Image 1 (spheres, one colour):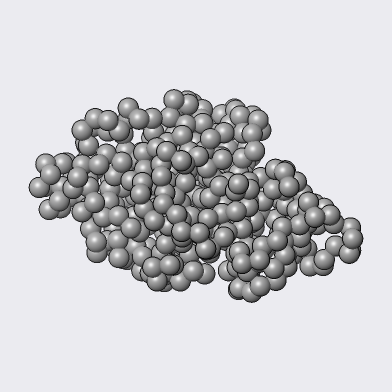
Image 2: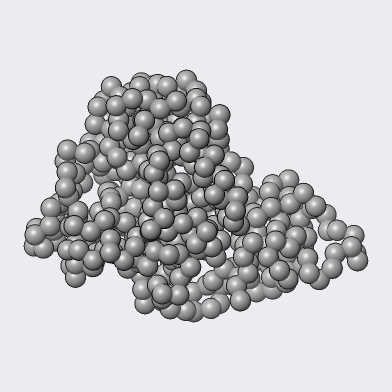
Length: 431
């Protein structure tokens, strides 16, 4: 069986499809167009090369990651589309949202075309580019949001750069709403977060690090919720990090505001206590917060307030993490450990398995307006097959991402992807 082989039958796997409430051992059939189909191909019409025996394995929808930086174009010294795509497919990720903070910024259809041309040279997940809400991400002038929509952007975002001008944020929301575009919001009030690198609290104080208070997220969410109510725009809050932020989202959803939210996988495990050794791989934005914040994020996933888990993958070159903690570039390389981290929440009996899979498949796909992330007949056969048995130690130097800036080196995980399919075609197979 070779890569790009068309798979027609996946036999005897445990099919887990939260969108259809299916969790059962059964065969899965794929038609000539790469779609899930109801009926088995005629006996004898499919050779062994087009059949995967998934006995003892889990057959899931391919994952959709709402935030991963592949660094290309503009930051190829950190990573590139080829290597990060290999890491994504090896983690069962079949769709990826790329934030607009590339160089050049994704504020015009020309940059979208450039990224598409580069991705066409390799086997990659489906790449969805988020358009820049403002020209150059400078928060001074609106981008041509309608042109970005027509070029295929599912949403606009100002990436991790706060829009401090309230009128500008309202204009972004008004214009996006009028063009049927969703807005991705990163909740951080820029003035309070200024130069901060850790959660404001006892740990940062003891370590002499400039803190980012929880109020930075809370104030930003409160402002944006007020503007969402005025404009009616559909909005998605990215990478929540605080308990109060979760409560604000929960209350707004209960009152009918058209919003969703996600959390980065590492925020469900790590806290401010983990940075005590000054490991620069733990310098992330938003910062790792308190244990009570982490526990509230986990509960938000369980009760559905947080409907998606993303990797927030940010590969860096070695030099970017060599300076003192506060002077290093924020972000960690997480793609190689993304699915193992998510599954660990289930194996540790923290979050139910079906909830976790839905947070990585059908829910994030729906957030970007896609019908993928499910395995019912008629849907595209983007599929991840996982062997749940292997116990293994994650070693950063063995990861497929070019970014080795991961704090999870040496962690023990259970379960590994064995095959990944895109539209029925085999695009990854573990040796």
